[in-house]
Image (cartoon, rainbow, N blue to C red; front, side, top):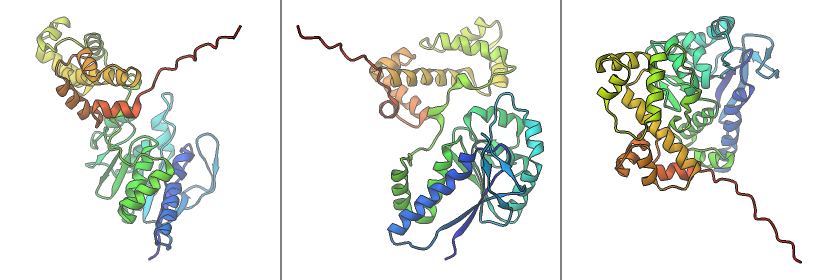
Length: 336
């Protein structure tokens, strides 16, 4: 069988590591597969561009080939800083957007890494489709592309031949899924172990830090969030909350929902889980004690809610993320 042809679309400002991350892991998988009796080359990868010269983020100059038909086209992400003029950046990448659109029209499977989803959306590939992207920029993406059904909690989403992934390391989640589909779970598992990559992730929820998400133009919901953050352990009382902000419950729900995209109760549950995550990571307190601290008298109910938000039970989460405090070694006593 001839190998699958995989092209990575390089463009000015793209992350060089995301250009080579998937091809490198697929190369490893091909070696693993060969060790299990599959000597034929599985993948042929190349870096493509509609430009003759590409300088990636950080100044790395990439060797590129002219765009040509491939079986799979991978679109890496770029440096989306707060100061970046996104409109100007995407407008300057018109040749790349056109290449993506053309490849998709010819039947090529298209994959974006991280905020590469913005380029797929600009090409019109994501309208009416489910998609994901980095949780840090999910809200910005959703406001810019309202016709996309964003699944911001997901690591990898495939909808009718178009695949999008979450931030940076999710490119390995995609690559392992790709290996699993073409070589089977045994090869994927062996490749993951050799590369020290987690092959059991299903969501980016455990990694979300809402304190880093931009909150422009949301004064009312920010005030409500601050109040809820300060009363995490208190019983949720919607009428009392509305009275605190001098509005009716209906107005509170409408204004908060318009600005935050969720209900106050949903936010409160997320905030409680966020606090519980911190305590699980940094203390040795029992799960029951932490549950009570964040407002849950029933540790079982708390565990269910925690699992819905993080895809892991509290004890499983602690085992994965717990950071023991560094204690200074006891001073040595000098013998007399």
